[in-house]
Length: 56
Image (cartoon, rainbow, N blue to C red; front, side, top):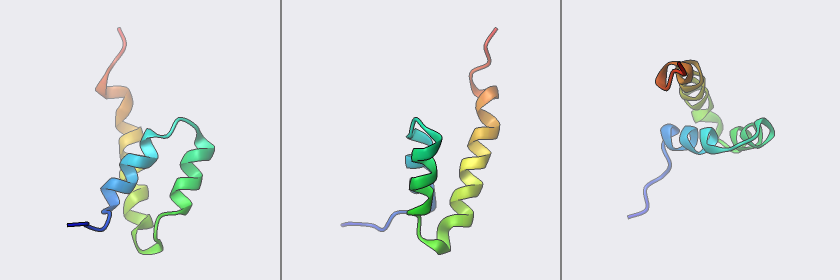
């Protein structure tokens, strides 16, 4: 079965991209009804990243 992508899938793909330009382009390809949720997931992950693997 081919399931439609969920907002978390879009967010995971965006977070895996190496450059800001690529991330912005990928975000523009997200369907409009899902953009707010995808943005929420991406911003949340970026806010938490420094605490996931703190450097000594």
